[in-house]
Length: 350
Image 1 (cartoon, rainbow, N blue to C red):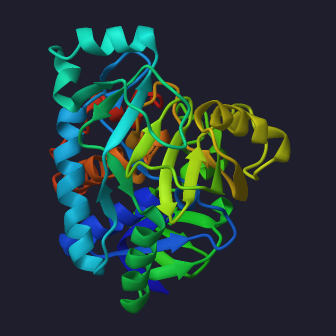
Image 2 (cartoon, one colour):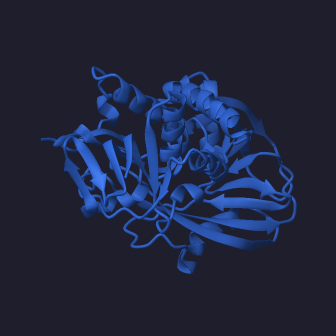
Image 3 (spheres, helix red, strand yellow):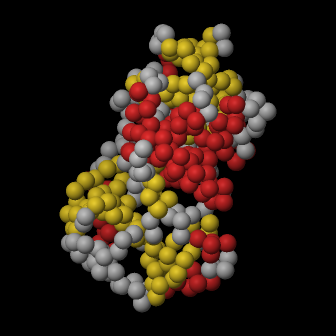
């Protein structure tokens, strides 16, 4: 039987960043990942930007999240030997009402993340629009490449266990968890994404997963070397290839792409582009969203060795590094308290 100090359950984006953080601090740990459960991280486009468009305000906690994000992914790139964080200029197409709002708020806090507002701008392949606002400090993370890079290291170090977890097989005795005579761990940290809804300890910790679908298209060249945001985003992913998304579907029973949901994306895409296109792929994943749209971290109230780091929803790219750092402080400093705004105790109490 393998014996370890910390066992991470799940190797999506959150589990991968937490595993890397443990490597950096030279902690004793293993990762268990299901071969059968899909990962929404492998579907996500990985976009990041610091502005919330609906009310034109800075994303919550952006001042803390952005420095941690940039520092962490740069260090992970050095570890795995691959570029994964891709800063890329991004524009939000503006109608007349939005244009006025953006002009008025350039001197407000969001202004530090808003660049030039371009009137009378045209983009070949895009239908006419009133203006476009340049978004600063935006881009995308190549999540599959990051996950694969961390996975390769874990496999080389024999710290990776590829097994489906049967929750009923977890036994707690002598201050340690044992799973099917396979592994014994002092702490178990669940980073299992939307699968948390089946977790007997944390399923009631405020989770409300939603389904996201994206499509990949081929089209004539859209003459803009960046991300275009309107009612959908348009992310370049190769020569004449683009990712388009994303939908937010609630009360869904599966994480498969469904043809009936395609019009949710194609109708908005056709309002945006003026050229023909061909759909080359259609993907879906369940986001581990939380009711208050904040991550969930910390220990179960009935067993401090049973932990969670989850609930990052559609903002996993920016939250994962910050949350991993919080968890590292929690694991290595017995006097450290997880901030209430992301503490699981706001949902689970004794």
